[in-house]
Image: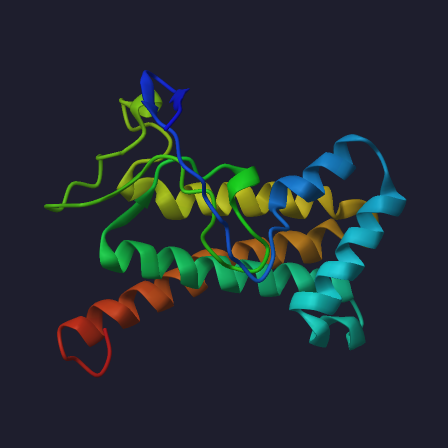
Length: 187
């Protein structure tokens, strides 16, 4: 029955968030910005154990972890766009490492194809969160994630290679869904 102030007064609500995890790219950025490598390592080890346990037994577990996050996000973004969904506030704090959608904030669905449309009223020019830019924003966020785990890896080239795989994984998922929608065996 109470109102909350957003851009205007709106009816209040109670929201329960359900996800496998609420660990976000922004969580890693926080510890990186604090130069708290110990907390960063603890968080990464926890995230690996919970979401990417296979990474723990590899030669470069944090790179393998990043590869898993990149793949999960690339496939998620392709699924969004396949359905015409636009995440209007897909910043690093709204991107999980588990590959789930949380914190929609402003979001919307395309009625007709318009790569420049955004549901975010603060991004009215569509410079950041528009439909046609979703995969580029995800790539940008994942680059921030890779930067945050540099102190754990040291091998910047391996991290860059993992992030660079995003476009290939995304394109393969996106074109595969388009082909399927059209009843084609391949794109």
